[in-house]
Length: 395
Ligand code: GLV
Ligand code: MN
Ligand code: MN
Ligand code: MN
Image 1 (tube, rainbow, N blue to C red):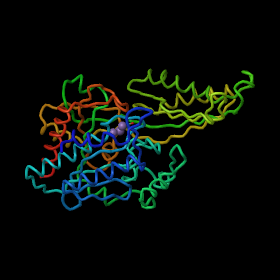
Image 2: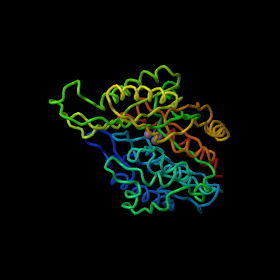
Image 3: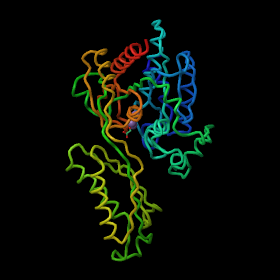
Image 4: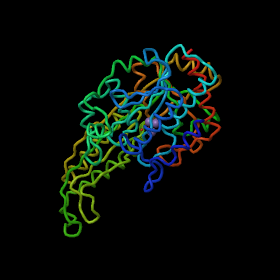
């Protein structure tokens, strides 16, 4: 079955009726269903599936071992995300492996399809958690203690899914097996539409990070509390929202977003006692966050509130392996290169192994939203490019 057919098979898994799109979060029932589905599909293609110490799924063609050509992506989504971010890379990998098998290719190096856990950080807040754990980019104790919005720790969620969280952490053996990593992904902006090309080779990934502001004020009655008597943490939170826009707009290449804010207790007629707010900043992120933090401190002081700032994750700028990029360009002939502001597991792996990416055109230019899209013809271009490259790298 083609990549497009495979995407059709999972089209009903994890649909989010209230937000629209998909909500598939690590170790929840939708993601679990996708893991079972992936295992079955890989088995049908004669691949042997195993889970590594960090909950990432590997489907092997050939004996697992060093120097393997590895391709894949993720099956989790942001809340209310699109159908392509992640799954497109997984189904394209399954399709490409099947095509290589059908064409009688005999790889000299083992080949594997890899599905990373919690790429979006949609449940536990840290993106690319599976690849960060695998490479040791996050401390395993810190990861195990991460909590989802219901207060469930990563360790508890993993255990409920049958994983052993005490084994989480840098996995030298798994890492040593990756000779080359290649991730196919839907493009998350308009780059390929503007270039008029169905596919591109990834060049760089913007630095990006997530920061949490916790404002503490005084919970009180919305009607009985005089305007002069309030310590409302929503005020400094609002200042951060507008400062993010104002400050990032002044800095070339910077992006700053507040996409999530949590007032507690969260009642219409209640002055909140605390507000948690998450800031996603990219490009020259740290100076931008420093400036926003200054605004937050001033606005909190003006309102008689406290503020605490925590850096929850940070990834520096990544340039994908130049040798691999050249090989992809030579092999695919005339394919453009494209930078991105979106983070990927391939970028985490790039510090350890030659890693690269292929992007497939997204006609809407929209991602992390239900409007994310790829035309069947463009998916076919992407799968062909992936098949050719995997064949080239593994023989
Ligand atoms: C993940 O897709 C991100 O870039 O936020
Ligand atoms: Mn994403
Ligand atoms: Mn993705
Ligand atoms: Mn991503």
